[in-house]
Image 1 (cartoon, protein in one colour):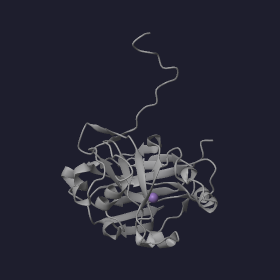
Image 2: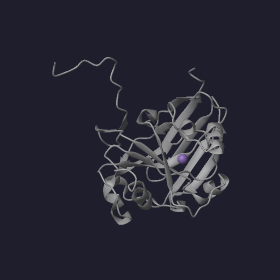
Image 3: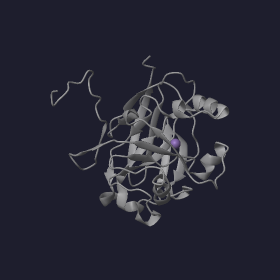
Length: 239
Ligand code: MN
């Protein structure tokens, strides 16, 4: 037996996100997302704002790093006629933690980024109707464009600030981080009851109201005050 077995197929690359102000990069391990975390968006999705947060995941391979002033290109995905944007604050985890108390959660935060939780809304809706898993609505190629990560040492702990998205220059989403039903500390507290949070994890923290469909040619530009901006253009389907 050789001490190194050859790989039968190429080893997939680990997606890395640039870190603002640093030569170092942030290798992505897991991508967790919070469902319905702003009251107005919860109402537009027909939900109850008193529920505890719930979670879903995307594959790390769905992350597409986009560094301003560049515009990222996202191919319109397979099998949908309703690709929705959800502009979100993303928390990058730098330390391991499980069953984290809300008051200790900030110790786990490496930094923040701006992300888009792209969603095949029609497929998500079909799955909800059948009480089947949402995966095909949320997990697909290029489903998670992300800006560079800004270390918490530079940003401080974020609890308020405008969060917004324009499509073709028209404001579509507008909210404030202080509108979150569950703030970042409580989100990490709840999430860490189910998973050991690990360095490299990204947590999408939910989107304000105004989600809607985009089509090839649409240009999306969003941001979170105190973090960064993220711009993408939807390009025609690859398949
Ligand atoms: Mn979302």
